[in-house]
Image (cartoon, rainbow, N blue to C red; front, side):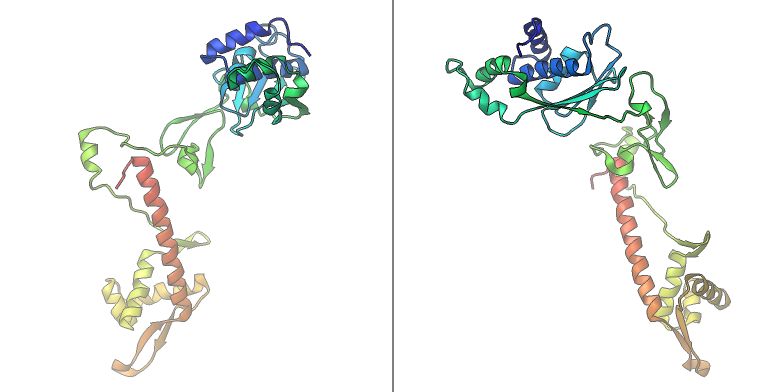
Length: 323
């Protein structure tokens, strides 16, 4: 099929937008003309300007050509960038719902070499060949279904909400909800950048960064009631060290009676025996941790260390601390 009469004009306009003429420009212009024809878009810059949506799969030359020809753009929310690294685009007629995906054939580049173009430079040879090769030689097309959400459509933002961490606004339902908080995708752990400099640039904040540290607290609850945390961990550690509930109680500055009540409450709620008491008169008695208690403490300390590492890393990223 021959190129339409306005093809050269569209190609020149595209090259002007892109900055130079290249094979990607030719493919992008022809891909656009083919895709629009397949979905019934005739006048994308006037009569059909509100009916066309394009998904592009490559951030290279052809995408500039598609934008130039169709008038679709990220800013107008009529172009969606899908980072697939493929020479492909899907054209959607919003009025009819028809969608067609157009993709470049992998063998087109090799086929272009066989076309006599007077021994021109490789790119010039491709430009000349892509202009005259048939659409069937250049592209594969297929009808597809594209699920469009209300928040993906052109128009004013449907919703704005503020991130609980960075306090920046998030538009168009792109927030992430995590542990009861509203987060942007960056603060939720999916960001493409890390902060290089502190977010506050006052001299006081710069100086403060030399001593700033983050503190986190971890505890275990059973049915909404706290049952184990740092204080109970210290109590059991002192029992292990002293071999005595009485000695452990003195070390953590509580009474024997209170220490024993803590132990019984932990054992009941956790469902494991933590402390073995030994009778033996005035100096012969004592206490020791059970095997189950030792294993529980080991796992709790592993959990605590892991949480601390995550919090420290997040703190450094958010506040731009590099040490």
